[in-house]
Structure formats: C-alpha cells, structure tokens
Length: 57
Image (cartoon, rainbow, N blue to C red; front, side, top):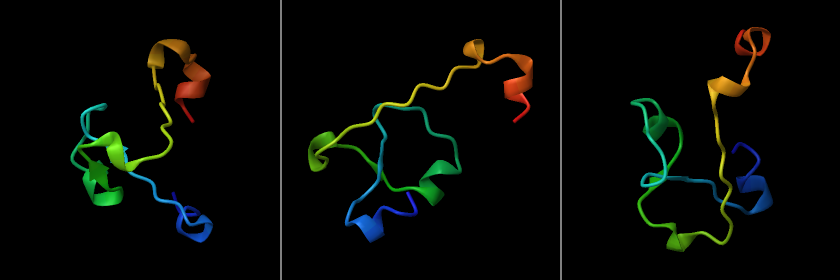
C-alpha cells in the first residue's frame, strides 16, 4: 500500500467482497464497484490454518 503511489498504482478494498471493521475505511480506500481495477488480489485469512505459535505473531 505504501509503495503503490511510487509505482503509479492505486490500492483499494472492495466493500462488497469483504467484511470491514470500523478501522479499515480510515486506513484504506473502500470501493463499491470492482470495475475501476485492472487486477484483483484475494486474501484469505483463516485462524483454522494457524497453529498457536503463528497466532502469537
């Protein structure tokens, strides 16, 4: 995210594709329509795949 502007890129989160907490909109732009993007990155975060040691970090 921090390097995006130096690389002439934009980063935003898709509101319809994720659950947002109260802090996210203050940190990253949230868009309602994916049509503005040329690339899409899906990130899956799931605690079920992390052991106790990895959850600590």
